Image (cartoon, rainbow, N blue to C red; front, top):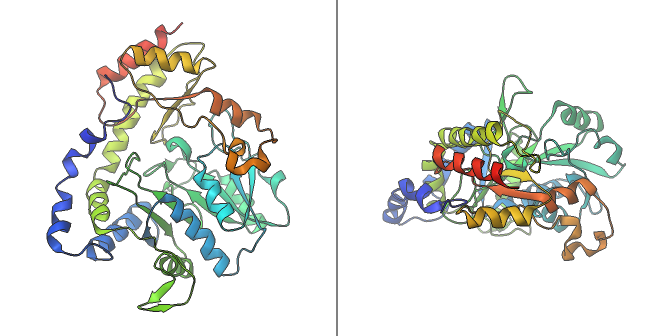
Length: 364
């Protein structure tokens, strides 16, 4: 069986990183967390990294901080891709802001930057780009729009740790393009913890201080609470695991690229759409599109290959956003109806990748 993702195999080299924490007797807000925050900020290329409970909290805290700073208010709008995991949108509505959904480009599966400007209104305060599947969604055109309309650029970097953009020189990593970025370290991510964890990166001193306080019950000083905050902190164990894995992130991403290259170069099946090649993508997910998704998923399983679907129901068709269910986003709906994720991770061998490619080619 070729597993979709063999976490046990991927994580075995890092189990030892927990020993230091367990022996220290200090499990929250210690020096290991500070080390990881500094190392990750240096890696991303930002001034600050603030650890938090998970990726959703990271995005939520960014928007909440902007509310506390008076940058955003009830009813203000945030442009966000219609094709995204629902966490991107949950963070917006939780802050009593209004998501404005914009269709993706079918070739990149990222937000279509040619459609953004027509979605801007007098209430627009930010654009949230989502580096979905491990591909950088940033474009110079998006940066130009933010500058001309004085909008905040927020990155959802839950799926693209270590990705870069060759459209910008010198090259920068995702998580450093915008005013702030939310990161998820859910176990399946390219940089994955052994449980839930997340972080915010930013160059903004005021924003960083506000986010750190809001994630610590609203307190910047011990037992002094200036804000109605929440408990959202990364623990020492997860920080230790992430710090150890960070050293290998680039080589791990390179291995993902090598597996992806086998698929891109070898799969030739007219019923299967392979994503546009992108040398900067770190392939958190390798998505293919086919009108016969369920048949293909079953075919691969019968031949010993696990797959996943990311994601079967788009956000605007979810029950929790029932007021949006009448809306039509045809490109997004096509992606969610046809997307199938095939194995693409550093635990795979070339032989396994070639076998998957051969099976895709033999699917009739």
